[in-house]
Image (cartoon, rainbow, N blue to C red; front, side):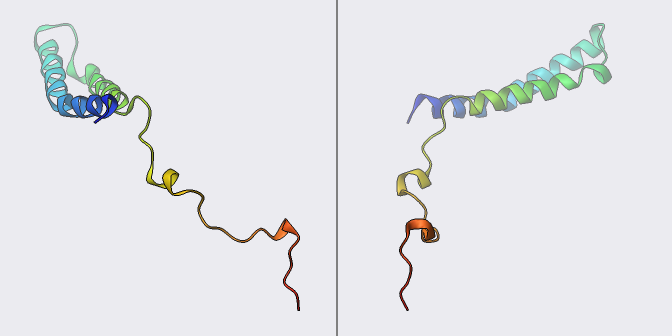
Length: 85
């Protein structure tokens, strides 16, 4: 297993706990700090977006299509060979 897929799995496994910690921090700031939850909830979206970027960062694994070769298509009509009558 590659390091990129391991990192993606790690970030995916930590997504829930990180979001819960962020939510708890925002509620604590709402109760004890100067920031209200109504104005700080977009931080949750930012954290989720950063986690998704980290999960998908790095080179993509080779796809199944690239190992098969070219896909079949219509014949090349510009090649000069025409069917004879």
